[in-house]
Image (cartoon, rainbow, N blue to C red):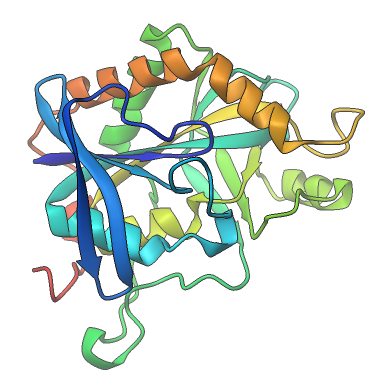
Length: 261
């Protein structure tokens, strides 16, 4: 099985891989450029979500092309990183949250492969939107890497690229969200449709708007991610090592992508 890594803000290069080569994959939604190589003896595809050097904003990421490309290469399990703001005082900057639920507040993103026509109309179950096996590996790897890791958390996904208002943050918290970010949806949704086991390690970079007592900036996000880059890379490498090739979850029971299957 090919393993996938989707690198978020601050993680743009496949630094944990050897024998790295660039690969381009044609999809029905456009071309995707990614890297392939070896990590802990396993073949890995690394995809920088925002492009090399963070050139693509969250609301313009071609999520369908990215997930299609990973599936076309044979990726069965994917781990993603995300920089998030905290809605809970107990989730401090520098903490890792292994997400288990999401709230979707995106507005304009294509969020499914199944738009009728040749692909049909499909309703996929999201009772457990993040793979439990991937989550288990991420949690163990995060703790081994020396991070203060939290088992479970609800991710409120906003459209971006602006930061949220304090009023929105208060609303998200009352609805049960623990962290806020701009990329987990529709990425998690599409991964499940494609039959990929998917998990996210969310790195808390700051307290959300209205909680920090000062304006937010993207630079503080990048600074914290840079400070934790080495541990985050160790976490990803260890998570891939911990994940068995044999899947016992139900993530692969989804409808799949017709042209790939």
